[in-house]
Length: 380
Ligand SMILES: [Zn+2]
Image 1 (cartoon, rainbow, N blue to C red):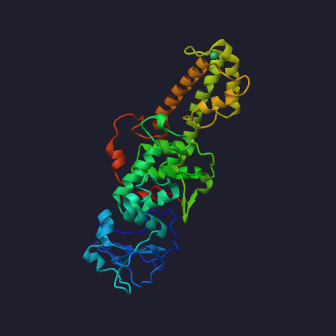
Image 2: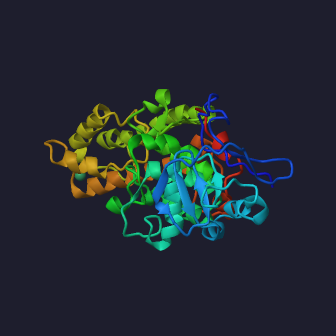
Image 3: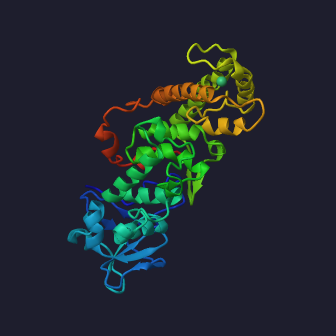
């Protein structure tokens, strides 16, 4: 199989970034590795991953690692292919006689991946007592894990992301993307949401796309529409198709939000047949209806957001405290409407296999990203 280690993950390929500047491993007709000559000396060593007894040097763009062919090959069929004798024989050698494999990856990404491979159960990826993984790190490790087909890391990445973007039921959804608080599986900044649609595709998680796009729609900081989001030398933007889903989605979700917010006005008018608020609470419902307008609930796209915390805060104010029965009744109706919005996410974002709650099609989640998927899903 012809292989190339050129970074599929880079979306902003620089035309000036010529092979002259960066040596790379390329495919040839026979599928064997061919390393361009003129080794320019090893870039900076990664002391942490420089094993004197290692038997190969993997040189990334800006960092080199002296590692073990057997260990990398054990976890990655791609590395295994690089290290078969006929391929190794074609690699240049350093002064210590070690073969040098040059790859076009950021050193930091490869360092994280090698740390996971070498540390195994003690790495933060596989040790639940360690702090959550920052999203920027998560995505860079996923990029190289996809490229080198490191299955255990990809399985863990899917597991972590699925906890953040649950599809089985709305009750598991956390609007702040911190479902387990400090123990959250991936720590995200607001703008990281803009990368989620690309990420779920890279990981072959088709169903999670609905939640990923929903999370994008609810991002408070919309600067990513114009500027994209920067990760090192890479800029990520929504693809044209996802931008269309995003724009349409915000409109559709705002409509769903208005249906939910309207609940207060309907209770206030007594126009909800069942269940309706008591007469004593009608002024409070009218007050809440106006407060919902002022708060912008009628035009925000956050149709899945819980109203409980807001009602609790409002209850502290004069005129807006509901009796227990009315509070329970209105929250029940709101939850029904949120659930209806949840069921519609597939239609809103044009995502098949939604609504969820059906047996998962394993091919949804198990399929690795097709070669080139990373590059194809990015437009920068
Ligand atoms: Zn009441």
